[in-house]
Length: 258
Image (cartoon, rainbow, N blue to C red; front, side, top):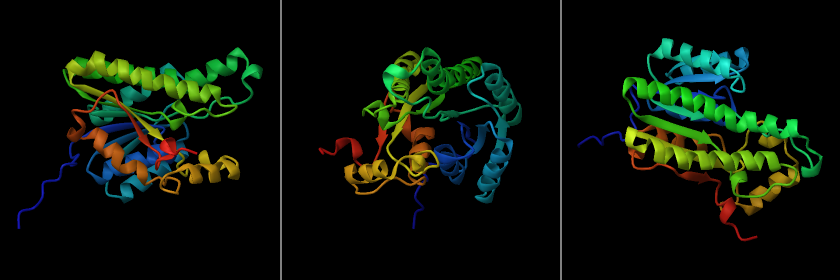
């Protein structure tokens, strides 16, 4: 019997995942190493980084961690230089680091709160992507840029205007970069997860979690494993004709009528 060709073989591929030491980032890293990619993960906590590397290596993968604070351009640049020193090149970049930012009533948030959330969820992506694009242009290569956005880019959340705004901002960035960089062989896409069980999401009120479950067409909330396949697809050559897209992964939450 003829063996089926593995469409998602990532042998020889090097992926960078920011915020890759836990949650959605680690889930994506697991999917990538399962398909043969070597993975560089960035995170601020060295101990958490080491634990994540142990999990990835237990899967048979090649992985290295680098301490990085993506809200600090100098830290980001140093981590990228160390990543290149370790792996020689990067083929895909998953700008996943981010967070809820400062929350509260719109009229009570001061300017610093807005800027803090923007630095965390937008400028960190720009700083990271710029380093990667410069690397690709210098070596004459293409690659894959992926940012973790959120269905909050499409849905309003009370007391979370900064989060919703910044997650919508990066989907606009994706569309612009897809056009600007497409002729250079670079694809740029965003993943918009719905409610997926992470440390951050499970820290929300139970009523909110129950509402997300009711609103999902699937009747369930997402698991971390749901992030693995989409990361592999977007890193692989099978996504070469997909760019500038905001891929919603929410169990049908955003299409539910009630």
